[in-house]
Length: 119
Image (cartoon, rainbow, N blue to C red; front, top):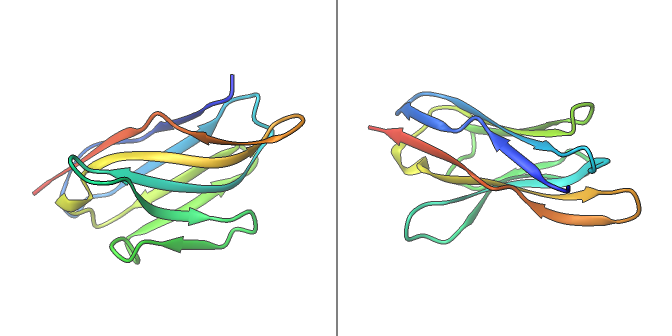
């Protein structure tokens, strides 16, 4: 089964930190480019952070300096370290990646993980 599984969400106070993980299933040989998106209630899904195949990163202005996207190729996992969290960071966070399978590449979404930041 081809899937990305997010974990690490939860409830945290403003100013706190969380680290989200996005782990690839065994059928995925490698993760190429990947992004973390979030969707708050009644808002559109937005791109938060992105990492390219060459490990270049980019961030939404709202999270620059607070969030860091990274990857561990040996574990086929992408991370999102979130520091100095604010109530406005509350959302469901989704991992999206272009992954390499045995004979092709594929775009895959995770199921999402809830992040709630209390004031």
